[in-house]
Image (cartoon, rainbow, N blue to C red; front, side, top):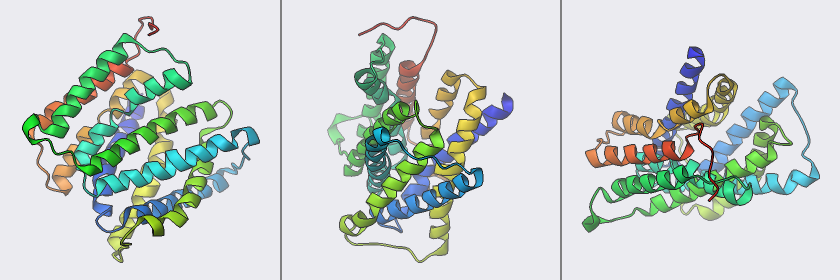
Length: 293
């Protein structure tokens, strides 16, 4: 079990670092082009993995529309809005906003999956909103300046929650690798005509380090880390694994300090405790019986 926790923590570190690496990459590539290239390398990795495992399964006609919807919104728009937002948004603030995804997911699950809401959910939501206030406003109403990039990060959060819901529905009939492979194929196909339309001007780096970072983060963040997480999650309690995933904003803070020389301010740290605390309260699964709301 200790070994499993070490691997899971490593995955969280990788995912938390993705915000800072993404911030670096959008300085060298335009967002839509970066999205297309990243999906291309994720696709090549998944194809190679599927070939190695001899894992090719067709999609049922009844699931085709859901897979297409997942590929467009949960993959392409999710990835593109992430990089679009990071052009101007702070990576730590972005990580904190995305940390509230489990709360939105729970509300969407109540609507579409008929899952019950709990008092904890509403209490946690309030706590998380207080944290977002501290992070976005820096603790004062007199100097509210919401970066437009954060609005795109909110889109990323919404599409991420949608991806979780659709994946949960599809996972009843399809295995995770098949879902991931086909949804990424759809996302890649959609991204090809859009990068020339959305990117004005079109920017592409000729630096080998930038390309290495792009390929490495695509394969490691969305490929290897996800597989390691899925493999080791079965050995630990889901609630404890959830708490580990909430450490991503703090990893983003530390990586931002190390790689971008971005100082960690007190109000930002306070807000992150509120956000993570709210998510923990909302998603905690204890022995208490859920109350329908």
